Image (cartoon, rainbow, N blue to C red; front, top):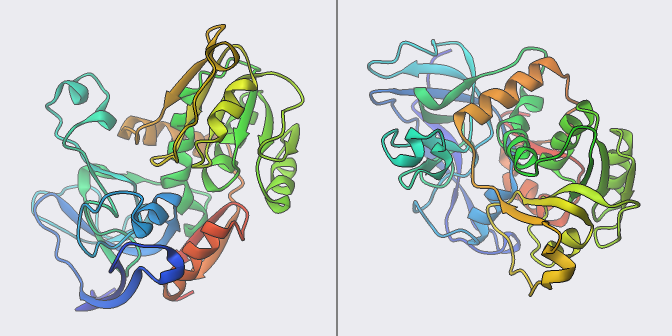
Length: 340
């Protein structure tokens, strides 16, 4: 397919509440890949809560007028100098992590997600709310067969981060997992836990999300501040609500771990040591992911057919998709599809 000179894109013109319209639709030149880069024609781009944090200013501005979007499924349209893979025409995924130095003590020990010089798609560099996007060839991912573009998109952040959060939660085999919030990431992580024999209890706002949880096999689905029906061995907090940290910690059994999956969290209220942390309960954060995490999760998606619940929006309706995400108007994940 010929590469056009220009494309439609959505940029964050002025961070602020989505109700005030921080996104602006523009025409931009299609970028040219430099050495080590590929140009990806966007086939689908997931709408992540991190995009909402970028648009609303919860995260500091790293790039003026950035194009959000970091769950990109696309086709390689061109390759820069030195790129031997992926090939032009290959379907690939572009995720949140787009650069690490490879030399610092974190990268060397396999913890590149903690690299001080790390860079991110849709925050440090333009992302997938556009017709085309650039990505370093070393940071794009081959995609599992058997999924269409819109179902693959949420796997590239929601799925990967949910997988890392599940690892950080240290869920024992056959254990009891609590999931707080049940959006794009949570509904995928829950399925991975269920496939491993866990008993999953979902605590979330919204009747639609609770119905989806039960349909996917959760043992229970209750309001986000209710107690689960049994003590938890592990829990993951997906909702960016700091007030829920003591709620989730109090629901843990002895030795349980709470993993906080988001990049942004409202303030956590004071904790009571005996009620929330005593008996070796743990509170852990999750910071981005490594490429190894991404490949491990995509291998799981090849082996275990995940049910991906999506609501599709045309690229032209990106602001509405973000507003609906904020308001919880859909279950699962939203996906932008150019020309839908």
